[in-house]
Image 1 (tube, rainbow, N blue to C red):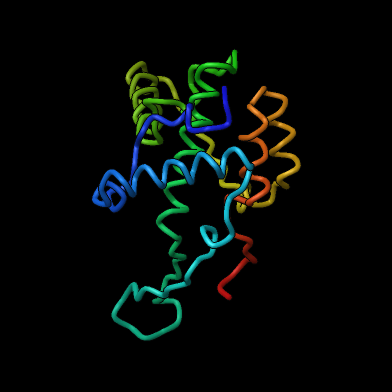
Image 2 (tube, helix red, strand yellow):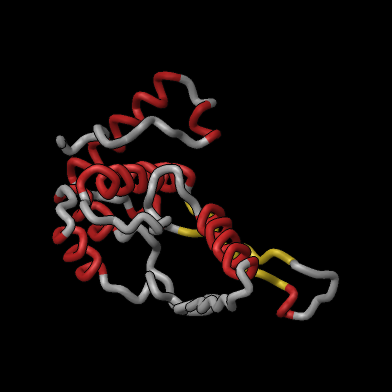
Length: 179
């Protein structure tokens, strides 16, 4: 596959759909160029911290921090995610049937429905069902991009997909906590 948007299925964000054909064409060329060069521009990765008040009290715990990302960067992330999903779907043998992440047509909702269905069928037979859930804090953000790149190379991802996220660090550099 060439280092362009060949893996991209054409999904765009709502704000970009309103821009008109010439601007969408320019964005497509820009994204294709970024993939060819293995770059994720830093300006697309910058965030703006906003505090949302979650209750009526003025105590600090009533505020919830969120980070707003650049719209163009979010669109480019979606393109990269589409390319990753397509590669996993078509080129990586042996994905377990019960895997829901990075699979076309599957979501966390599908996983929850599957678990609920299993629990109902087990308990309907009078058996006991036990579920264990692990929440590994910062599991993804604690992996080094070198480890992610090695895994992607092992599974045969095209080099431009290995380089782009790691070079540009798909996620902004963050420290734990609110700055």
